[in-house]
View 1 (cartoon, rainbow, N blue to C red):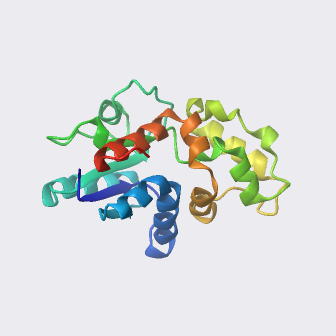
View 2: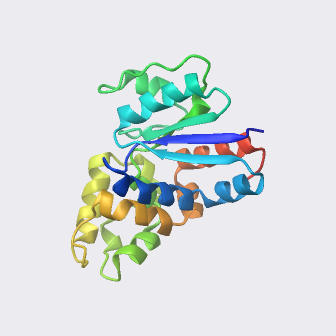
Length: 211
């Protein structure tokens, strides 16, 4: 069982004012894991990094400087991705990344939001409606069980159309993303998103407890 977990996460914007809500949001979304972590007195550090390359670089630095910590990278895949594909292989082959797998780590240390964090939101339409209000048009969303099969552009377009009748008028990642992480039901997301389930399972194995 590990004594410390750090998860380096893409997103959250450029400042602490925008990153702090995402830190709270991801801890709320991973509440089943975080509850067990606190019960076992394991150190928990969700580190919001802004850009994806910043997340990768900080993760690699942590592997060298904090080898005793169970360090995890969590980034968007940017494309639909079968659960059978190696996460490190995907990042190595993807134009715009071409990242090398650090020495001594396996695929468990590289987790994906497929194709992006917003797919998690599509997997729980009720959570979206709860956030945006009664005029949110869930009919404009793809089926929840197809959330990880959608291209990023499809996800963004669906959210744009569904939020148009609401008071918010549109989905904004910085304004809405962190709050939605606290409102969507992780059970629904895990049911529909295999990569999200993989993240929970990996953390559960690390702490030696089912979550």
